Length: 202
Image 1: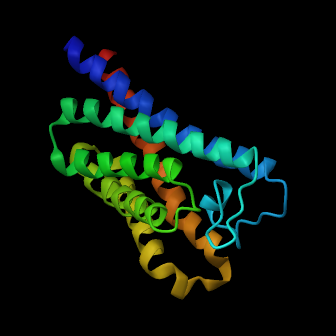
Image 2 (image 1 turned 180 degrees about the vertical axis):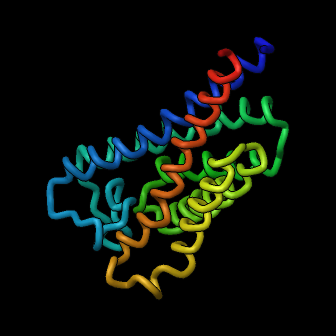
C-alpha cells in the first residue's frame, strides 16, 4: 500500500474519531459540572458555553470546558479535512466537512452570548454536518455507505422539522437530535477510514 495514502488515512481517521469522542465527552463533562439545574429538554447544548442574551449567564468551569472543546475539535475536523481530501479528492465530501469544522470552531470562539454570530456558526455546523454525512457515502462501502446518509438525514430532518413533530422533547432535546447524529457519524467515519487502512495492510 502507498505510504502516503496510509499516512493520510491514519491522520484523517484518527482526528475525526477523536474529535467526535472529545465532543461527546466535553459536553458530558460540562453538563456534569454545570453549577445549577441543567436539563437536556430545556437547555440547549450551547447554554454550556453561555446562555442567550439578554441577561446572558456564563457558568464556570462548564463554559471554559465547552468552549475549549469546540475550538479544539473544530480545529481537528478542519485539519482532518485536508487529509480526507488528499486521500479521496472529492469536493462533495470535503467542502461540507470543512464547513462543519469551521462551524464547530466558531461555536467555541463565539459562545451563545454572541447573539448574531453564534447562531450562524451553529447553523453552519448543523447543516454542513448533515450534508457531510450524506455526501460521504460516495467514498464509503456498504454497509456504512447506507448508514452514514441515514444519520445525516436524521440531523437535517430534526433541524428543520422536529420542533413540529417532537415538541415534547423541548428545545434542548430537539437540538440533540440534530447534533448527536452528526457527532456519531464523525466517530463512525473516522473509524471507517482507520478500518479500511487496517484491512488493506492485512
